[in-house]
Length: 246
Ligand SMILES: [Zn+2]
Image 1 (cartoon, rainbow, N blue to C red):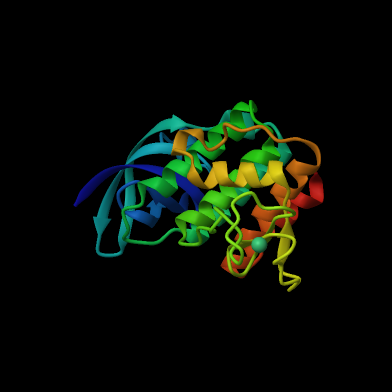
Image 2 (tube, rainbow, N blue to C red):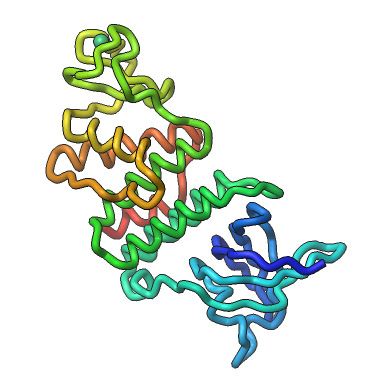
């Protein structure tokens, strides 16, 4: 059976002499493993679209042993990422996160769309990479079922929270007076809380439409990263690498 779908390459592994095994996030099939026969052969028509972080329209043949790539047409290669080591390593981190939170046999166009919009924003360079990273992390957490309750303090119910804290385990907000001091809280402020509320509530195309600088940006970035890692209960080697070079 042949299937044509949009796919983003999240991982490429060399296979035999001239082929690759890909992990691809698709619009219609969720995460799939795909054999790209001869993709490393000189002059191969699938060479560009089988690179890490390439987005293509792929025609896949589903056989007894899984999917094989039969044809592909590049849609976006995110060229801006391929000439900048910091951006490429951040894009690789996005790919590792997407691979972790995506499922096989699931129709999840929203996750693919978040991945593509985030890589595009990074590649275009119009938004600060730190903010794209933070917004991507928080939306990934939301799409994975960990939407934080950011409307008001979880204890007193006040929406205008003084000295807000996000509890990284519970996904709840506490004001300075109600905080529990568990040590698993990320410190926020008015500006970073506003950014958090924007990112979790915005339409997919508008998640990066906010500005934040200085201490607010630092708090927001820290909270989003720590929240995703705490909720997923793991770290990422691509994130460690990114941090080692910036
Ligand atoms: Zn309170």
